Image 1: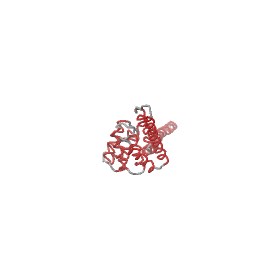
Image 2: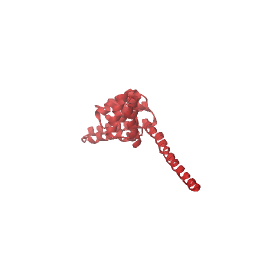
Image 3: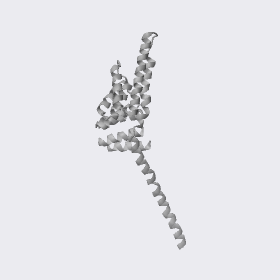
Image 4: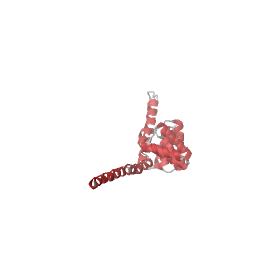
Length: 212
């Protein structure tokens, strides 16, 4: 009888230890990794080359060019615009935010009507330079022209968070989630909701971010 009792005790001790060891292990890496994704702006950065170039290509494709000297002049003018845009993108990549902002401002001033891609690119440059008010202004003008521009509500929400416009930021991230939900969008909206005192909504957003 003593030997049977001894044989049963170690088996009972090992089972709970396995359950305890398994529970904390998955939670720690998830808690540490998810916030770092929200800090990164990979969502916006990934769409920059596509978002900036598509409207310009559409403009060129939709322009009816008649043969002759006038057509050649128009072609050279459009080619110069594309070259300036490429130069501005290169300056952004090099970290010369002031130079990029200056080129985009010149392109907007010389254009007969505002072009969404230039406004959005300049807004992103303003954001990186810490001028959140001007970034928001450009994002709003861009949205008025292109309501479904990729990640524009996400960029606008980030700028509004930095500017202390919490309610506006929550609305922007909600629009972004409706168009293209992502863990970073849910995490950023949770920050806005927490600041507004909506703890239930903030926790729900964190759950959605973790689930994704």
